[in-house]
Amino acid sequence: MRILVTGGTGFVGRALCRMLAESGNTPRIALRHELPPAGTPAGAGVVVGEIDGATDWTRALQGIECVIHLAAPAGAPVAGEALALYRQVNVAGSERLADEAAAAGARRLVYLSTIKANGESTHARPFTEDDLPQPETDYGRSKLEAEQVLLNKGRDTGLEVVILRPPLVYGPGVRGNFLRLMKLVARRLPLPFGVVRNRRSMIYIGNLVDAIQVCLMPPSAAGQTYLVSDGTDLSTPELVQALARALGVAPQLFPFPPSLLAVGGALLGKAEEAGRLLGSLQIDSSRIRRELGWRPPYTMEEGLAETARWFLGTVKRES
Image (cartoon, rainbow, N blue to C red; front, side):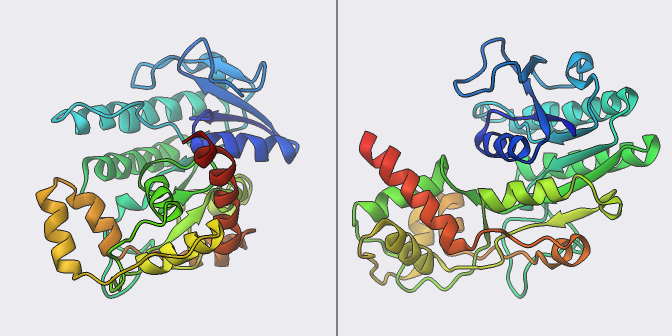
């Protein structure tokens, strides 16, 4: 199958393109710049420039059967301009891509959204696909708007649109808060999460790219939205303990009132980061398992072990 991948040089995109190629598919990578990042397969990239409502996708879409749309805004937005930037890329850019993909004869478009389209936290029960989306961030709002635009385009043009909403994605090459937590655990620094009683869903990158590939073919997936995760939810102290086992160190946890941690995070301007460490965000991924027969090929323990091997062989050696 000839597949166009946007965002193919990113964290998820690199793993996805490897899996597609290993499965006998032919991934074509949409590039923003003439000089692709190191590791991009020779001849696999087509330059489309910046992704927005005016992007010319003509060359990239020639002969393409399916599109996997992973691309997100490049770089951190300027304060006060986040929603406009996110809408330019996520909404207008996705709409343009869908229009041109349908006109070029592509059959299906799989869109990688985010659980942030549902919201930032759960309380009594996990999120499901039937919940009324209540995004709380500009990024989450723009991704939900993009979903709605794409599904409408699908109904108007016949393009088969499939939406995936993952939670935090981890694996070799991970960055951001997950990598920062790994560094703290590896350094055996005492962490004040001993009495945190939250539950959070995650997904290993190998499981996510497998779920994306599963969404390429089944007719029943067209027009559907799926929440996808490893299926194992951990509290923050359980995650610290699991990372410590994978890294071969002893976990250093001590009890500290979560309410005071939340106050401290707010005072330091880190309320969002504190919320992820202290609050719950669970998702129910049973629909994609039931309807498409998807099963995560890796357990969370296997995913964390692979992430730890990458960390010990790359990040820790370089630091």
